[in-house]
Image 1 (cartoon, rainbow, N blue to C red):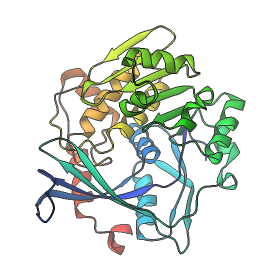
Image 2 (cartoon, rainbow, N blue to C red; image 1 turned 120 degrees about the vertical axis):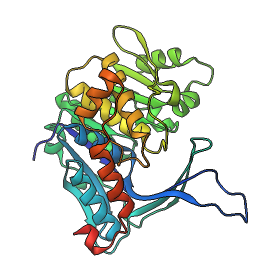
Image 3 (cartoon, rainbow, N blue to C red; image 1 turned 90 degrees about the horizontal axis):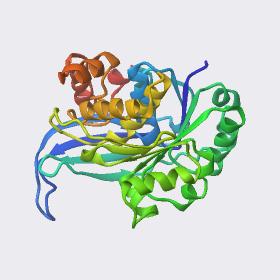
Amino acid sequence: MQVDIVGIDEYPVVDLLLNIDKLPTTDRSTSAYAKSWQCGGKVSTALAAAGRLGAKTGIIGIVGADNFGRFCEGDFRRHGVDTTHLLLEPGKTTTFSVALSERSTKGRSFIGVAGSCRRLQERDLAKEYIQNAKYLHLSQITPTTLQAAHWAKEVGVTVVFDGDEFDLSVADNLALIDVMIASEFFFRGMFPDSSPREGCERLRQAGPKLAIITLGARGCVGVDDIGFFEQPAFLQAEVIDTTGAGDVFHGAFIYAMLQGMSPQECARFSCAVASIKCSRQGGRAGIPSRTVVDRFLADGMIDYTEIDERVAYYAECHLGDEVLS
């Protein structure tokens, strides 16, 4: 199967999401407003967002052949992501995370349990699958992802990178990246004394044709071949949970580029998608369709019909056989 966006995610993850008022102190307890089982992972959720919006996307990754792994596989398909190259490793476990979102601070905390799957290797890649795509989306620099990036560059596939935490391996390979979308954490780690505008300009000078820095509730800034631009965040929707907001932003941005939007238009569209996502718990339930986004951009209204069907589905999931069937 040929897709427009290929993403490589070493470890797709299953999240148990709990929405609370505030993290309890030691030896204290608290109650959750809501719980939800959803899937996560930076590239994985970006692909789910792009797929939900209407793009043809595909994942290259590895999970365990356990209930969590099968849940990941099914959830990719629910969001229109091709799983031909998702490996389910027999006898191994899938990475699991407890994600705590605080209503009082709008912050998040994570407790992770690493799965036992082996690392993705070059032999797991599908060269033709990657080279037939229009975009390759990455969030890590490893020997495997570097090989994929080189294959992409050979034939003009655009390489998009999610720079979350600052990592020297990413800084050393910026020449392989066409579109760099970095978090404020990455930016501060690489350019501690620069303004966001200066950081974008310096990122672009290092190789990427387009550099974006996401700034959370302040939106994002960017520099392309035309110059510097800013995009404020949308504040119409109530923020319930910011888990996955950056990942969804990336997926929406790649989708928007695929539609031929300018970088500024991509930024506006992606901020809208991320804003809608944040009005519901978790990284997957609140991802809107293109129709919902277009209406939101036109009049500020959000049609939650389809979204809340997914909210209910994920809230009821217990990863039993009847859910996975």
